[in-house]
Length: 404
Image (tube, rainbow, N blue to C red; front, side, top):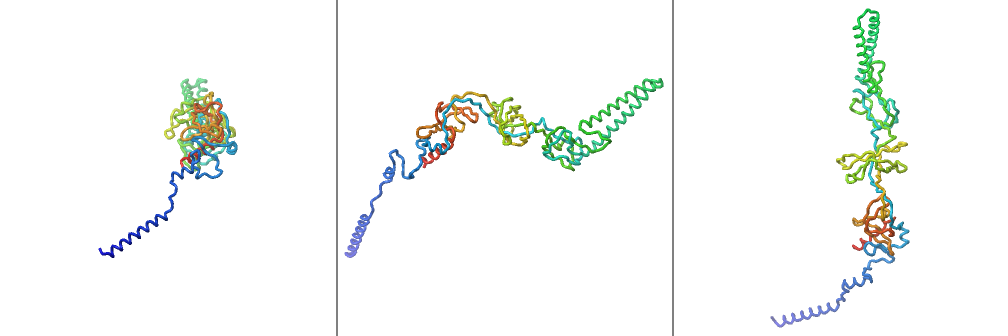
């Protein structure tokens, strides 16, 4: 290496040292460490106030506690009452449906095979007993009427012969056995005529003047036409209903009872029925409890019979049934709407000096208005009886804030 090269390398090292010294001199002072800065923003209670907004309303403090002033109570419609003893009649609330009373309805089919000539009523029509519903044409009916007319003629002839034989026997002209034969023939003719008449009567077919095939099917009871599949020109047979008439002055209310609640239901049990069509609740009692569970619903049927003045209840309407259990005394009870579910536990919001506290309770019986408290609350404890859902919402917001 020559002297010139050694001199160049030495100059480069000096320049690099000067540049490094210049950079260190111009670097700014490092900011305060993150931990120290974070601690600077904590207040005396250990809460971070960096994101607090001026004038923010107080929220949840300790876990399960909600700060709330008297003004806020009034603004949110929160009413405070004291837990107290009460008589509770447990209710089993069940969905139900209005059904036709099967004992007051009848499905009407054709008395014999034939064809519907005309239909005289419309669905929903109110009919009286004996009113004509439809006209049917049936060759069988014509044969039955013809058989009855022929039986009447044979009976008339048999009576004439019997009268003549009796006259001859009384005159000593004919033998007694001729009179007996005539008497037997008359009796047989009378039996055949009565059998033919009974066949027509069984199907409510009038005998008519002759072997006509036209028959008017009449209503066997007063009621409303709830179904009418019959139309003019359709074929009719005794196995297919043409229309259904129901008397709706009384209806069935059928409630679905879950399998795990069947032990609470019994015939004669009082019940309250409510429906949109009713101005007020109606009272009834259980008349029947189904012994078999539905394969699809896994529920049994509890049936109530209910008077239906004004025909307000119509088959197919939805209703609610509350089965009433025994009336018992609860040592501690609260308004049912005061019980809220938070994190899968039942809580009641108890009044404190600063606001409310969510207290876990164990509930017992309930009648929909009052709920028995078995554990967690003493009689006389003030609590949020109305508007507790607002407190539940505030509690949820406070928990969400702590998670952030």
